[in-house]
Length: 350
Image (cartoon, rainbow, N blue to C red; front, side, top):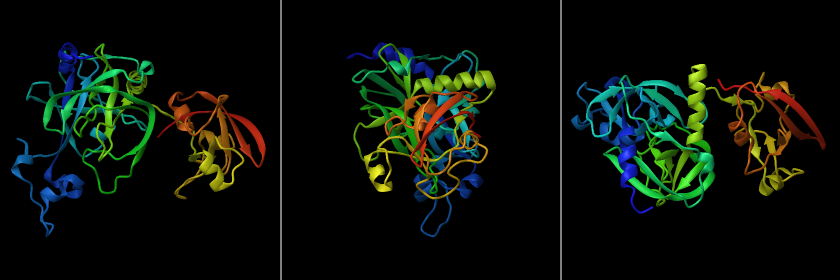
């Protein structure tokens, strides 16, 4: 597609900028890494430049993007954009300098999705597509607040990969102790995405959102990743029906098995999920969890989930992504050369 102008005109009003702010006292408690050199000197003295202060004397510590999914002020964004419980979040509509205070309605406990709300009548809303229908090579457009400086930025590209898994740290208000999180099932694009674009929509040629821009690879060029919009659609349904985002839990730590893992641990199979923890910390099987109730133990190898093979490419996490709280599932696992099958009911992630 050579001319995106009509699509841009259609979707731009639905895209908003989210500004993250903190009081000076709260900022002193935990200074983000990207601000440490700005607000402290060599002697550790704390000082905030006036350019970072808003009219209320709060300090701007970051920004992201979001998009309206209803005419009643409901927005979808990344969880990492609104992760800080001590921060205040302001929403600016496209081409407007009026700040609306945002209320966090829900954060997905697993995926990088959050739902927020502003009090404004008749907000423009964007159409949601079906990320299951995304194809390699399909042209797409990203809209957002690039680098937190350039509102209403657009960038085009193509779908470059599907069902990707990466480890990522959040780019907003990042803490020095923040550990990388695994993100799975992502859509890869070659669109030029930057910090500040996080939470903005990835749009197809129909003007539908097919994904939420969420991560880039530092040092790489045009290598970006987005959360499939169907994840957000599932979360919105959960929020409307239950008042919160419920996600299913099995209650195990596992290592996906491939040829290298099989050789390293002398396993009898090159696929499946080895019930263990790579760090050696915490329980491998959560007490009282569905896995515990089913009798799953450390060292077991889960071979199939509801009759479908568990592999390095299609892990337990991927299967759980497709299931619901309260659903009965069947697991086939290997223990000491014996294959067993059990059933259990998925509980809710707390």
